[in-house]
Amino acid sequence: MNINLTTIKNIIKNAAIEELLTRFTQVSAQLKADGSVVTEADLAMQNRLEAELLKEYPDFVLLSEEMTSEQQQNALNSESPVWCLDPLDGTSNYASGIPYFAVSLSLIHLGRVIMGLVYDPVRDEFFTATENEPALLNNKALKTSQEITDLNKAIAIIDFKRLESDLSIRLVQEQPFASQRNFGASALDWCWLAANRGHVYLHGKQNIWDYSAGYFIFQKAGGHACTLNDDEIFVNKLEGRSVVAAVNPSLQRNWRNWIKQSTN
Image (spheres, rainbow, N blue to C red):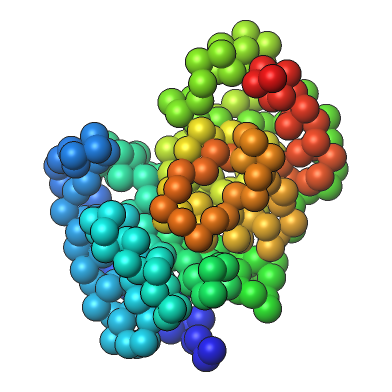
């Protein structure tokens, strides 16, 4: 399969600058049927990227967050390579004027991810990884830290909204980490972990367009992750996945063991 990574990056970067940055702080949000937020920027990015990606690769299919569930399932059922797109990850941030959002795109072939791209237009940071190439940030190699292994020295990125209440309460009461953050854009969360801007991660539910690109990049950078049930993160299904992750195996083991005390 001949994929020109530079071409894909240019398509994403140009679209993000023209469709997202020009509308940033100037759009109003609406609620979808599931209660999530959508703006005209989400739809403009989806329409533009769908047209340009399928023009460049007409034999591929597209799965996007802004499609219907039937369209998404049909895409996953296809035997063709699948572009899995979140045209605006962090829509609530974007609509509120918070500069933490990104475009996320993965390529799924034969049921596995073979490419991941996450672009942050505010910082002009492009995170990439391919099956045969390492994780990169603006073409510089990413490698997760092997130094922090004690949980009490780690910065934790935690999305409390989707966690069971017992686990959330224990996290607040015991605070086993050095410090805690919640930024609000899953794809960037994964990439910031890959860049050592956090050390452990916890999320109650992510969809395939939320995690497929970022998790792939994080893995390629040396990170470790599983679900709260100790299962593999990626499944080629429209199935929400919980996340327990850390930048190295020792820290992951300590993080997972601490969480298990709450969930057993």
